[in-house]
Length: 160
Length: 425
Image 1 (cartoon, rainbow over the protein chains, first blue to last red):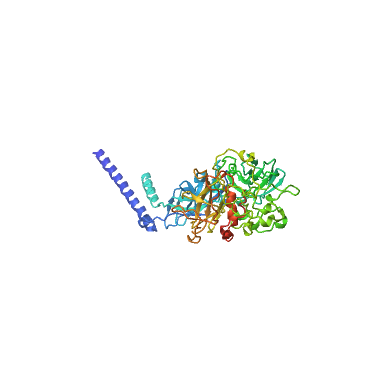
Image 2: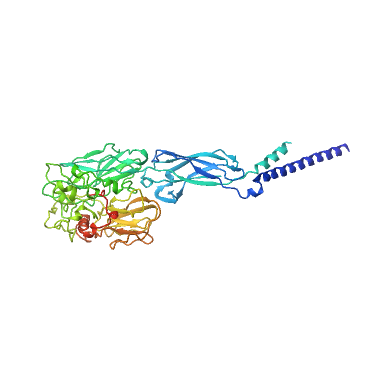
């Protein structure tokens, strides 16, 4: 009999805990909604905006020189957004770098590197921003690289 | 209680969400502007090549220069580019030569070319350019013969070729003349060249004092639309020879037994032409114009971007090109086979030009389908008739004479004229 009573008491306690957990979950959910980041915002996440600062360094030459492209990632939305990482790349088309979106014939994207120093993963609040840097270099291929002379390769940074 | 905290924490995290964003910017690659003022000074059989400093954009400096003679001989800077701005080619064999000065920065190059210069004196005239040895200069430091993307040789800046005579140093580039045609004082006159040689129609060769005014921006070895020679063609020398392979009987001709002809290097009959003038690396909307040498004997074929090779003559321009990167290619053909093509890539900035602002020349090669319209600015016919005995010797010189003698050519639009820098051969 005593054993049965103890079992009933345990069930009661566990049930209470379960009720509290559910209640807490509901509370957290509705708190988010109440602050303007609720369900209505979930489906309309605003893309991060990436803006570039003043470029420093250069010029890019085969095997020497680098350019530093600082960038800022901003959460333009009205709710917090999780910035996981950023990626940087030399834009290309058909293996050639692009310049203002058009391929620069003969100038291989493989000759360039875009080393990204991303910001740490962070939960960006509305209007908050963080920064990263891309260092661009050009390798010396050992072959004629004249098609790249004067070219302005497109560099792309994606924040997600 | 711990379970409560875990549950609560997970719930809070779910209030944040992620969204990707992308932006694009540009890095900048330097470029080399070719050496300027490539001049030649001959003392006997020694030729001293001098040039102005090649510059690079964005504050870098070229590593040095490679100098080659038009027959392919390396003069200096190969394999290690020289940092000076002159070098001497000693003991130059008889002939007519131009020199190229290639500014180098690792795998970046920019080429500038001198005018042609005859070497040799005496009764035997200097032969015309040896078509078998007049291939474009190879770069010679890792990528021989690769001329794709010759950079910076914007014809306009090079138009300021230097002058031996200070009195003519301020002559506008359209009438500029390099020192290379001037024999050194006290030396015998250069041997007369064959009638269709680059020099035979050029009175400046015989009258150094007039060289700055009578000689055009490029030697007569190539058609010229605004060559000063064209303004006053000499009917005795500039008239086109109906048979380019047949020397003018009134003009000293190479001795048939002259071994200089037979001694030519036994290279392939079809050799690369050389692009002697082209747009800058980045240009505006003006239709780009190209000039190139012809050494094959019967003709050349040009190609733009992804089009196909079609017959063409120098100079040639293209209208209606859209903004972006384009590649021009030219190759020589002897009628049965084509030689290797050389190419030049450049970028047209800004919006696409109107496609109807430059009508195609009647003599222009047919444009390949889906390619812009090539526009020949000089109706120079292809030179030697096929099958002539010596078509590999004189073709381009005949083209020149015709081009210079054509009054219509003189009125060619300046924008389509060969620039002052195309002083090849």
